[in-house]
Length: 427
Image 1 (cartoon, one colour):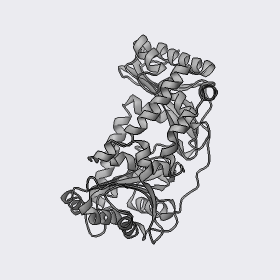
Image 2 (image 1 turned 90 degrees about the vertical axis):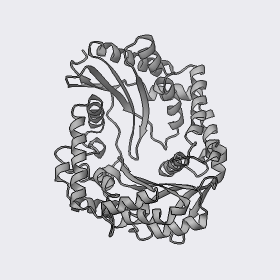
Image 3 (image 1 turned 135 degrees about the vertical axis):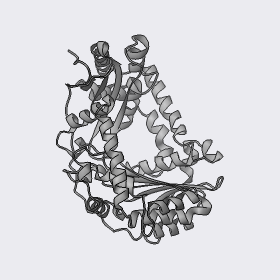
Image 4 (image 1 turned 45 degrees about the horizontal axis):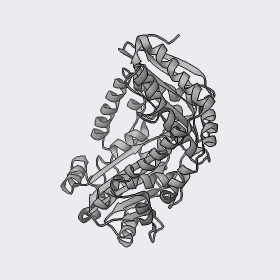
């Protein structure tokens, strides 16, 4: 999807000044950035629920729904539905994560009525025809079989199992080889009835559309959805406290390492400080982990770490791959760097560099209409104010060296939960 020139040149201040909250006559709310430079419209939307609402004995239902919603709806079978999309160059897709069922829509301005109508049909009258269900199921099963031989997939799966134990976050969001064959059309329809509802709907729109026209389309598209979702409340959970180490034997050339531990929730005051120190430790090619593990010692081609926050918990997760005979040395060096930053925190120069990166990278996150829409949707899901883009730089600048040292000790002071997949365990 092409970006308009104005958005390619956007700063956070420019975009923030254009964000408007619009509410349709039917009460459907959206955040809108109106830009008529190019006749394109990008829409991002999400419903609460996600994979946590899969039946406990049938993980994978939400991912199957995501794969099937654009495979026919109403009186249009899969072929007819996609012919309508292709004829107008309309892009429509869905996805599911732990907490949300999401989707996106991309269309030219002239085709907006048909695009929004196809979205309405997909959400309100999906067909789940048997042939389509079996085709999507076969693809999911093939992917699950591949993951059984993929060390990175095995490692991250085990990490979440150990971190969250019997909580829904420990389940395999994409399902299992036992659960996916059992999923029936009734399960998919039940998920749609329970999750796709107006009370959890969030929408962000960027492009060539005015507020009045958008409100009319919002009502036509979403007003017939149920008022209230009907899903199981999910409890809060703290990730398992480190240190722990798990080994999964697999005959592969490299040993894959996933490491992490409890993180910082998005609504906590420490969140931005956590972003800053995470950048210092493992957030890119200038990070300590990359420099010490890869560049200085040549232990791995890549090593990185990121913050992951969910509605009911948070973790930090890192990964690396190394030769089996150097796995022990690699893990030891990762642990050494983690201990060091937990005990001493970053330097002032590292803090300044990380803050500069976080402010600059925000501009890259806003350089296309699709990225702007996705960012604004995430801000809504994170319960941030509509003017957050204007405040972002000041929030980053407010992180002090003392804040960074305190949060580094909080994140990494207990060590790591480490999962290794490969030929031999680390001693």
